[in-house]
Length: 73
Image (cartoon, helix red, strand yellow):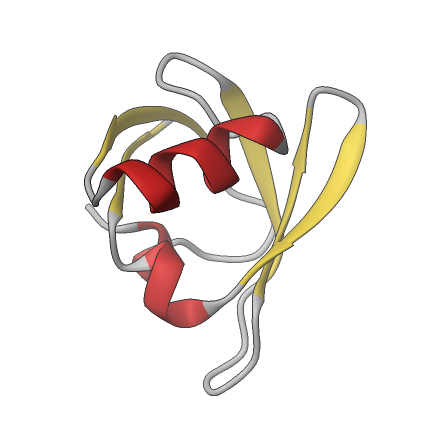
C-alpha cells in the first residue's frame, strides 16, 4: 500500500521508496528509510501526510508520499 493510503494512528513499516537520486537523497536525509517503523498521525486529502518516526514528527507532501510503499501493521 502507498503511504497516502494509511489511516491516522495506523502503524507500519516503510518497505520501498521509489524515485530519482535527488528524491532519494532528500527523503532519506530526513530519516525516511526502508525498514523504518512509523505511525501516521494525520492523512487529510490535499494536505501533507504527517508521520511520527524516529521520535520525530515529519510532514511528507502527497506527491512524495505516493512514491513510498509501506506495510501496515
